[in-house]
Structure formats: C-alpha cells, structure tokens
Amino acid sequence: MSTTPPAIGFSGVGQVFRTASGALEALRGVDMTIGRHEFVAVLGPSGCGKSTLLRLTSGLIRPTSGTVSVFGLPVAEPRDDIGIVFQKPTLLPWANVEDNVVFPVRHKTGRGTAEDRANARVIIEKVGLAGFEARLPAELSGGMQQRVGIARALFMNPDILLMDEPFSALDALTREEMGFELLRIWEAQPKTVMFITHSISEAVLLADRVLVMSERPGHIVENLVIDLPRPRGIETSNQKAMHDYVGHLRGLLLKRAA
Amino acid sequence: MTMSDTSAVSSSSAPPEAAMPGRSWSQWFVRTPGLLPAATFVAIVLVWEASCRLFEIPSFVLPAPSRILGGFDAVSTSRWFEHVWATLRVALIGYFLSIAISLPIAIILARSEILSRAVYPILVVVQSTPVVAIAPIIIVALGSGDTPRIVITCLITFFPLVVSTTTGLMATPPELIELSRSLRAPVIREITQIRLPFAIPYIFSALKISVTLAVIGAVVAEFVAADKGLGYFIQFSTSMFQVQQAWAGLIVLVLLSLVLFQIVAAVQRIWFPWSLPTERE
Ligand SMILES: Nc1ncnc2c1ncn2[C@@H]1O[C@H](COP(=O)(O)OP(=O)(O)OP(=O)(O)O)[C@@H](O)[C@H]1O
Ligand SMILES: [Mg+2]
Image (cartoon, rainbow over all chains, first blue to last red; front, side, top):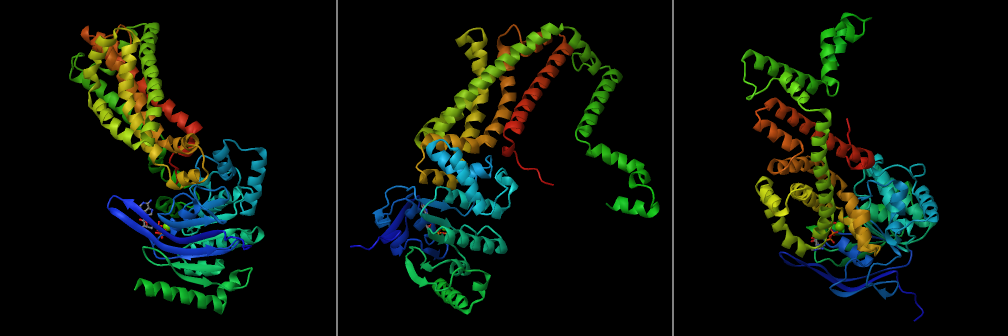
C-alpha cells in the first residue's frame, strides 16, 4: 500500500437535505477522485448538486451517506489547506484590497502580522492587482473584485482550491482572460483545483479532466480526460481536439436534458 | 444642451449664458443645492406673516412669525440653555442607553431562532403601546428626576434599533459566513468582523430615526412631569396663553432634532463612508 491517496475522494456519497417541503435528495452514489495537483472541472445542469459537492469537500457539510476524504482522511470539519472562491467575490466593502486578502488570517487568529501583509502584497501582484492594494472593492470592476476573491483564497496557501462558478458573473472577454490567468497561477504554483462551471468550453480549456453530473439526484455520468497540451492559451481554443471535446460534452448534456 | 445650441447659432461669439440670461439664472437657482427649499421656506414665512396681518388672526390661534420672534425674547438666553440642556440630556442619555441595550439584544436575536421567536412578539407588544399612554404610569412608578424620562426615551428609541440591527445582522452574504466557518473562526469574530460591520447601514438608518425619536421621548416625559426642558416650556407657555412663546420653544425643538439627525448622518459620512449608497451620475 505505497500508493499516495488522492487529494479528494468521494465514495458512495449521498446527500439528502431536510427542507420544509420534505426530504430533498441532492446527490446519490457519487464516486470520484481528484489527484494531487490535478485541475478538474465539474459540469452539470442547474441544481444537480455541484455546489453541494464543493461544500462536502470543504467540510462545511457532512454527507448523509458514504465518505468524502481529503488526502486519504475522512473530512470531519473544515480544513486549513482548502481555499474557496465563490461565484460572487463577496469582499468586505469597508476593507481595501490588501485588508480583504489578509482577512482570512485576521479572522482566524485575530491578528495579521507585517509578514502576512507582505505575503498579501505578493499574492496581489500575482493576480495582477499591483498598485490597487489601497483601493476599496467599490472602486474595482467585477473582474478585479474576483481577482481579489482569488487572492484571498490563495492567501493561506491552500493545497486545494475549490472554485464555484468563479467567472460566471464576468463578461465573456474578461472571463477568458481570467481563466488563462488562473492557469498561469496554477502552473507556477501547482494546486489541486475543483472548478465548477456552466461553460463547456471553459471546462475543456482549463481542466485536465471534466466530470459531468446528472440531474438531481446528482451523480457522475462522464469522466473525460482532456488531453490538450499545456501551457494553454488562445491557440488552444482554435484546436480541432478542443472542438471535439466540447462537441462531445455538449451532445452529452443536451441528450440528458432532452 | 439644445439651449446652448440655438444660442450658439444666434450669436456665435457670446457665451450661451449671456444670450439667455433669464433662463440660465433660473437654472442656476434650481441647481444650487439648498436654494430651492430655502426660498420655499422664506415664501411660506412671508405668506404666513402677511395672512396674520391681513386677516387679523388672533395670536393664540396662529401667531405671526414676527411675534414668535418676540417669543424668543420672553426668556433669557441662559434660561433657554437650561431648557435645551434638560431636554438634550435626557434624550442623549436615553438614546445611548438604548443603543447599549439594543445591540446585544439584536445580536442574541440574530443568533438564536428560538429566542427570537420567544422575544419578538413581546417587543412588538411593547412597540405597539403608545409611549404617551405609559409615560404617566412610568413617572408614577419611578418618581421624579431623570430616571423615568430616560426610561421613556429608551422605550421609544429601542424598537427601531433592535429590529434594524437584527435585520442587518441577518443580511450578511452567506458566502462570508461560509468563509468564516471554513476558517473555523470563533463566533465572536464572525459577529465583530463580518456581521456587525455588514449591519452598519441598517444600524445607521435606525440611529437616525431613533435620535429624533429620543427627542420626542424626552418631550413626552416632560409633558407629564418636569420643571425644566423644552417640552415643559411649551406646555407651561400654552397654559399661560403665551402661544408665541410655545412656538418659539417648538422651533428650538425642531432645530435640536435636525442638528442631532445631521450629527448622526455626519458620523456615518465621516467614519463609515462605504456604508452609504454610492452616488453615481
Ligand atoms: N442547505 C440546503 N438545504 C436544502 N436544500 C439544499 C441545500 N443546499 C442545496 N440544496 C438543494 O440541493 C440541490 C442541489 O443544490 P446545489 O446548490 O448543489 O446545485 P448546483 O448544481 O450548484 O446548482 P447551480 O448550478 O444552480 O449552482 C438543489 O435542489 C438545492 O435546492
Ligand atoms: Mg451552485
């Protein structure tokens, strides 16, 4: 047993929510693994349980059945080595960019050191916001705000980055640009990424592997390895192989929706 | 825009303002902030003065502004300050006490659904009781002095503060609460670093309402029992048929409320500018 455990492992995971109108089965029999430093995109119809998958991984909720494990250990509570990026940047409107990025450590320990601030500035530069440290979120565009959101998630230097439709609120051009920038950051400092999206082309363009979920109760119905060369860029979008992958996934999602 | 275009055609050398003096003057008048309401105010006062003289309205019905001005002289300046201070002191102590009580209660209500279901109906009952009606009861119960007046002021300012703060504490983006929980941060910091700051806009809208309510509370208390204060002064003046004096007291009261309101608004502007709605053209 010398094989290293996967970064993220789901085995027979089911999730039932108790709601006012009765039980709601969000996930049923989810089996999947995500390897260390792998970039995996998750596609699926609305309400199929993608966010639930992410929240299970983060330890914010516990599965009703089956086990979720991170680095081989069952997830019992939120871990320090996981960073989350939400669909909306949800920054603190009263805090400037630097304070927003340092926020996790201030929130967790009650204080931020000079070293933390120095680290924050390095990350702010990495996400392309050098010179904006003292700006308030309201002074930034949507794309820049989401960069702050990513910087905040990267600040604790997590091994795993969970991203829930992080670019869906952005315009198409900014969205593509941000995707490539995320890849650049990921290639410079490899991390395990679970990337939830509604965009098929975004999933193919960014990920090593694409998981497709069924409608509710959600489970994995396709596991597609994206064998496109890295580093990826605008040229990648023009390759025939990319179109084949996108075509295959679109056909799958449309057939399931029909 | 069209104005300056046509004037540019008629006299190409002259600036548009010079070409259309009447129109641009009225535009300046309308656009200068504060000028329009000030002019309206002056007009009302003039019509008021003229009507009182023209129709010889008895001053106990409606004293003319000039007579009200005389009402200010009926009392010495130091006596005015005594009255203002008596009202202000009760209003402010009651106000700050109310803040000190309502914030912790709001935090508890926001945290516990059971407690909020237990306490909320009681708060609504307290709020539905007219303060004017309980004021005499409170004064009998608590005797003379500032205490009953402060209690009355608290009662009237308390409800908007609790309700607004609770709403604000619950209006925090759920993602930030998830972030807090994913960091396993202590609950106290979830409140101090996320929930309370997010509630600031809600808290301030309540603070602005409550500061004027605090003045009302102090005045109501003085109506019931007092030997000082603007409420007392108004009541005393009317009982002596010195209506112009009562009006003068009323004006001071209105000014006091306005100033307090503006102070609260300024505190928000200076220390919490991010909590104001962003003005965009
Ligand atoms: N805490 C909860 N309590 C009750 N029901 C929930 C809860 N969280 C999610 N659900 C339900 O579970 C189902 C899956 O939700 P989830 O948010 O995971 O879907 P999703 O795939 O992320 O959807 P979308 O694409 O719209 O973001 C939905 O029907 C949702 O209403
Ligand atoms: Mg979702």
